[in-house]
Length: 278
Ligand SMILES: CC(C)(COP(=O)(O)OP(=O)(O)OC[C@H]1O[C@@H](n2cnc3c(N)ncnc32)[C@H](O)[C@@H]1OP(=O)(O)O)[C@@H](O)C(=O)NCCC(=O)NCCSC(=O)C[C@H](O)C(=O)O
Ligand SMILES: [Mg+2]
Image (cartoon, rainbow, N blue to C red):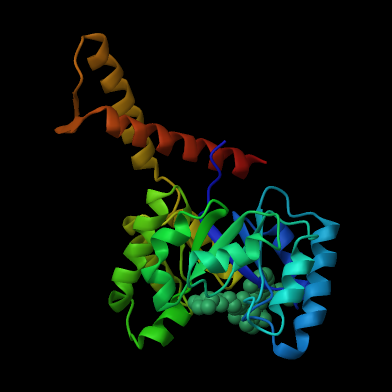
């Protein structure tokens, strides 16, 4: 089954009520946070609270990713020791600059690693980071990136977003877009989700439950896309039966490579329908 990554919600590890609420939210990924959403004086208690909540279970099929503090901070070492024993699917390392940063975590934790792509050096090294054998996901940290680049708009970060996407796609790594900070602005979020989807991201990282439905809709195949994929497969199957390698649907050519995309669209739609029904 192809897992969807439409919505990835950050939840502060220090907030038991929010950690519990997530058990009932229709998110594909949960980013349990020990880093920026947790204040310095709550770091140790958040680590314990999170371990406890993950141990209780109840998160179903959602991918459970724990974001630790960077290894060169006061909390990184303890976090990396604790996360190895947590009931989670992957560890998210912030402010990754080089593949050596991933090596350092890989030596401590025996779980899949995701990288926050949010520093200028990290973006420039995206290819070597994506190529690391333990890396399974990229998460864009557009707040940190804007701070370090001194950039004021999303347009100004487009090169960085696309470098990460190129590296992720070259090495079969999941790529999630950055957060949309104005969590009450549904229309603005929709526009940014659709832009991220059109660029090629697998999903959007989120900070509030109210953002989930918008991201899930934007990154799911539409009924029109499902219908088109179905007709492309039918037309191409008929063309092949007649010894031809090309079909035409809606005035556009359909070749084998389009059928790969069409099948992926139908598989994703079927998985989402299954998840919605359960
Ligand atoms: C943004 C918030 C501080 C808003 O909090 P609040 O005012 O409490 O929201 P609401 O009153 O509207 O909450 C309604 C209910 O929803 C629950 N809730 C809120 N947020 C979450 C959440 N993220 N996950 C699960 N549940 C959540 C509340 O508990 C309420 O529940 P109930 O009481 O039962 O009704 C807050 O949303 C928040 O803290 N969000 C997360 C912020 C965060 O994680 N920030 C760090 C990640 S972003 C980042 O670091 C990006 C990256 O590194 C970069 O560089 O860009
Ligand atoms: Mg950040």
